[in-house]
Amino acid sequence: MSPTPTALLGLVLCLGPAIQAQQGNLPRPSISAKPDSVIPWGMSVTFVCQGPLGVEVFLLEKDGKPDSFPDVMNSLVTETEARFPIGSVKKDTAGRYNCIYFIGNASSERSEFLELVVTGDPSDISPSPTEAGFQTAPTFQNYTVGNCVRLVLAGVVLLMLVVILAEAWHSQYRSRCGPMGWRQDGASQKA
Image (tube, rainbow, N blue to C red; front, side):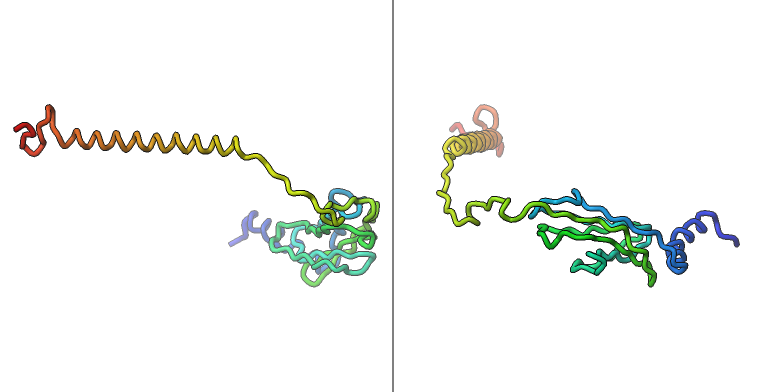
């Protein structure tokens, strides 16, 4: 029994990265920064590392050393990228970043360096009133019109329910009494 072309293709796709990893010639990953590599102080940035299919772990490094980011492990073989978000950049966030990935026991070459530049400083950003120690007066909103509309709608719904109940009571009363006041049970209401 010979293997089908589909089975061979599946075997190549599954074993290709493992064979490549054992040979030691894993392709170099790429790195990018979203939204950009020049970020104002206090804003967020996300590093995106991309590699081939089959990557098990991505690692982000800063200035050639592993940074405090946790390694990203790919749970699916079809994932080819990992994201490393930074919520609020500061001056010490600036630097040269690169990626590396692992397939099995083999590691890739390091990506090219990406220079993250942080512009401005904390004094450029005006603090919110509560951070600056200012107390703001409470604001009051007028809800009169909205409340009136809600009350009118509730009244209309209540009126519709009363009409439905009255109609149901009237229908039930007419079904108990036959035409011209005769009862359905055979007894006459007229005596």
